[in-house]
Structure formats: C-alpha cells, structure tokens
Amino acid sequence: KFVYMMNTEQCLPDHLASSEAIGNATACDCEVMELSYKRPCNDTSLRHVEYLYGPSTSVGIGRNMLYEAAMARDQRFLYYIIMDDDVQLEAKDTLKIPNPWRAFERSLLLYEPAVAGSTWTTNGKRGDDCLWCLKTIFSDKKHLGCKFSSSSDFIPVVHFDAAFSAFHRRAAAHILPYVTTFENISVIFRQKIVVMKAEIMFRGSVVAHTSVTALNTKHRETVSKVKGEGRPTSSELLTLLEMVENGLPEEFKRSSVAREWREHGVKHAHM
Image 1 (cartoon, rainbow, N blue to C red):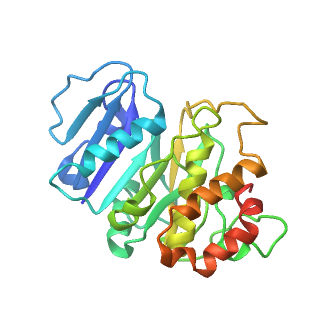
Image 2 (tube, one colour):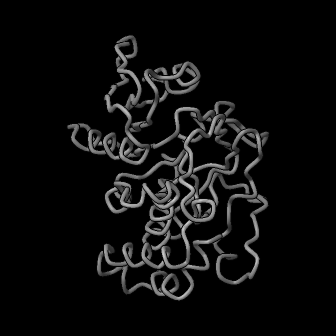
C-alpha cells in the first residue's frame, strides 16, 4: 500500500531499519526506495528495500528519480511517502495507537486524504506553530498558527513541510514530480510549488496528523542564499504562480481557489 522514498548517504539509517519504523515489510505493509548519493549500498538483508545510486544528486532531483522509479514498477502504491532520511516520528499523548508510524498509516487508509503530513520539529524546536488553518489564510492580516482542539486524526492545512509528506496516487499524478528549475536559486522554491499545486487542486484534502510529529533531527540541506534568506521575492513568486496556473487542468484554472490565489497568492506564499 505504501512506498517510502528518501535520499540518503549510503544505506537505510538504523533508526528507520527498526521494525517499529519501516524496517519490517509486514509491519508497515510497505516498500522502501532510497537513492544513495555518496556511496552505493550493497546491503541486501532487507528484501523490501531497493537502492538507487546517484552520486552528488540534489535532493529535488533525487526525489524525482525515486518517484519515477516507483511509477515504473508494475506495482501501484496507494501512497507515495517522501521523507528526509533523518526524520523520526514521535507520538503525542493524544495518540490512541502508541506507534506513530502505524498510526499515521492507519489514518491514511481510514481517510485517504490527497496529501498528508504531520506536525514537525527541526533541531528540537517544536513546530506546532508552523501549521496553518484554512480559515485564517486570507482573512487575517497576521497568519496565526493553529492550536489543535479537534479530536480528528487530521486537520486541513495549506503549508506542509517537505521533510515528511504522503501523496495519494491520484494526487501525486498532478503534484509530482518536483520542479527543480530553480534549484540554483533556492531549494525552498520546489516545495512552494508543491504547496501551491496541492492547495489549488485539493484544498481541504491536504492535511496534517494532529498526534504525530516528524522530528527533523539534522535538517542538513543548505538553502542557497542568493536573495535574502533564499526565500522567493514577490516577483519570483509571481513567476511560480504563473507556472503553476499554466500547468493546471482546465477545470482547476476556472475554480474559485485558483482565482483566490491569483488575487492573494503572493502575500499568502510569503507566509
């Protein structure tokens, strides 16, 4: 049902090779695909793990290679889960299933959202305030973080982090592969484009798990600081928005969400 995909230096990291995570094919009902960018991995002990080798490959290009390889398989997966290799999932007190990996997978099967992520932390800094409620997008001058009070496993969001996100096969066909045109300017751009596509085409079905946190322990990718902190300027965001809109199916171009983004998208994408 699931395929987990990530770039890594060589072989599957120990914390992910555990049966509690994705090291046991039966437990996770999954396949794992990794692109090794430093040294090829010759470990064959985990039969459900496939290694590709792409020396000195950037994260965006590596993720695209993995997605293309997964799509080329005869097997069709329900969810394509793209993640950083340093991610660890943590369970909050509200989680009914103690294993956050199995809880996240169960929720995917139960609700089948278009895109799903989690709350997240980077280098130990809690990231709950990095999730946004749909109702606050354009109505508030200040973009307020959500404070979870719902009993649902998932809440709808707009922005989701690239460190850990699951794409339903029907949504992935419209959102992926990543646009890597702007990698030399900033690695942030590719995720901005993914967020825009997901929001315009699947608003309300882009969600975050309220009781699972992805801990980005190393956060190793360095942002290319060409302008400011590597974040797109307003002019660059307009270019991204035009690119996204031009690539939309006709029915989405005429939607109220697309119109909203045309009017307010640059302001929103800066948040």
